[in-house]
Amino acid sequence: MSHAPRTRVQRRPVHGVLLLDKPIGLSSNDALQKIKWLLRAQKAGHTGTLDPLATGVLPLCFGAATKFSALQLDAPKTYTALARLGQTTTTGDAEGSVVQERPVESSALNPPQLAALAARFTGDISQVPPMYSALKKDGKALYEYARAGQEVERPARQVTIHALALEAAVDADGQPALRITVTCSKGTYIRTLAEDMGEALGCGAHLRSLRRTATGGIGLERCVSLEALEALEGDERLAHLLPVDSLLHEHQPIHLGAEDAGRFLTGLRRRGTWPDVAAVAVYGQQPAALLGVGHTQAGELIPDRLLSPLEIQQILEGMPRP
Image (cartoon, rainbow, N blue to C red; front, side, top):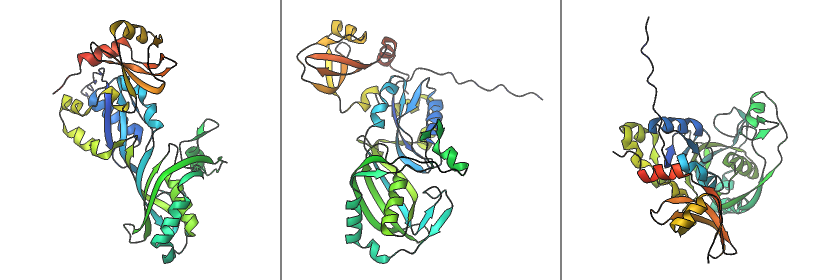
């Protein structure tokens, strides 16, 4: 019996950022690989993971933009979440088995109590990372130990809750719940935050849903869904790509003449009258192409991450457009 040969996807250089509204059920890497295939891109990376059960803002970087993906890793994130009260689970979310049930005091959910709870968990707080997480211990992810029924010691970590709003709610089963809106530093586990607040209320809690609504100033309103991308034909999908420097909106721009631009691209420092700035985006003037990022100190422009001449050429030539 003969089988038709599989069509091999011809990869190509693609440079830019795609803001995906990640669907539920996909890991961040699964989502990345799907979009990479849809765009036929050679090189891609994401900017920090979202749990499969979480949805929302996931910036995906292609080509030269992968050099700046770490900027989003460090950026503050905003989430909305629903935590079921009165039940704790093995995983801290809806995927786990229920391990304890406790009554929920209605007085715990009145506005003054919730305001006090929010105040208690705002600012710098300490969190013990959950066992069901991708953090590594001795080269193995914590969730691997958890699936084998092993509990390992995890040191508490400091994270920052920039803003926290709580509201009494009910889940899909009509059970008491907390609606959470939180802006937090990198490394914050919303599952753990929900569990810790449940313990503070004396009834326990676990996460029922989680949606990231913003990261580093990028909101859901700018995102495209996987379904919408799949519905497009071929190169029409490239219209959703943002420029490589769309992750650099907090960098101060500096423009260099041809000679300085050429030397900067070889990694040489340039002298000028710039004030000290921790993060600058450096462009050539003719044409106005992004060269890389750096910082200025004591009148010197110091390169940090550079694009290659080939990447710059490909960006200037442009990719196929519909």
